[in-house]
Structures are given as C-alpha cells and as structure tokens.
Picture 1 (cartoon, rainbow, N blue to C red):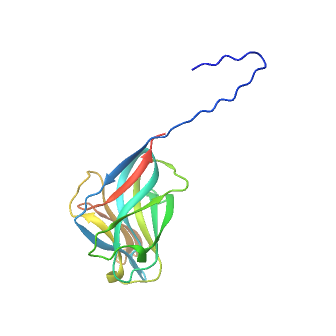
Picture 2: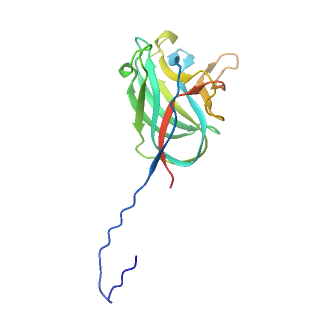
Picture 3: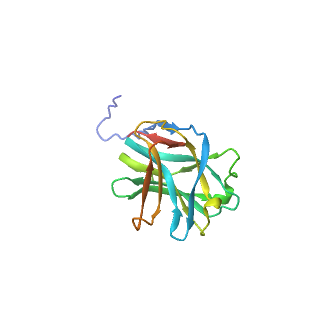
Length: 186
C-alpha cells in the first residue's frame, strides 16, 4: 500500500497488527501424583515439566491439578530457566483449597502472564507451593502420565535432598506432566 501526500498535507493512518497465538500441550494423564507440599525441610515445594521452548513468548500456562483433603496455600505458576533457575515469568494462580479433591477429575488451572517474555531454551514449567507446612498426605497433586509421552520432556520435582544437604531438582524421565501453554512467535 502506498499513499501520496501533497507537500504540507498530513494524514492519520491506523495500523492494526494481529498476533496469532498457538497452543503446545501434553494433555494426557492416567493418575495424579501428590507432589507439592512443605513440611519443615522435607517436601517438594515445586513440581512440573522440563522441556525446550524454541523462540516463543508464552502468554498463558495451564497445569492439570487436584488436592488432598486439607491442602491450602498459594499456588504460583512459574517458568524457570534450567541453566540457572532464574524466574522468566511467574503468576499466582490461587489457593490450593480451590482445587478439586484427589480422586475427582483434576482441573486445568490456568494463568495469563502479565508481562510475557520471549523464551528460547530449556525451561521448567512449574506449579510452586507456598503456604503452611503440610504433610505428604495433604499435598497438591499433579496430573501425570505414567510413561514418557513427549521425547525430550519429563516430570521434575524440586525439594530437599538430605543425603546431599541441598535443594535440587529430581528428573523423573519416565513420567510426563499434563500441561498446556499458549504462545506467540514474534
């Protein structure tokens, strides 16, 4: 399109850009694994999926979750870079008490990020628990598949490892977590 203007003439032009969004997901699960809980130093306050995001801006993140009977506390969805565990994006979903009970159908809990950030590389997409100490039998559960569904991706849990005296991620290579993210390519 071209517009010719006479000398001194002005014209307002409105340009509308449309961004197309896409969905990447692994929606399959065959059981819910109680993962997110904190009890003193023990427990796993983070759980999710390790995967590679190739030049995408993730705008929305969803994870299939449920809870044990008395689970309560904030659930935050976070994307962390694998190389250094730096948070690339994060948003509070809500309180664990809002999730369906373990044994019921898990829900797809989703957040829309306020400031989506371009991502290119290996990341963890996580649900993170912050709240009162709760034992394992009161944990938030991740919906997982008891097999490797997507090559190069796998379930991870972050917690205290007393034998090493550190907090670290455990890679569970033969499991995949159910997730969905919406992204755009810029």
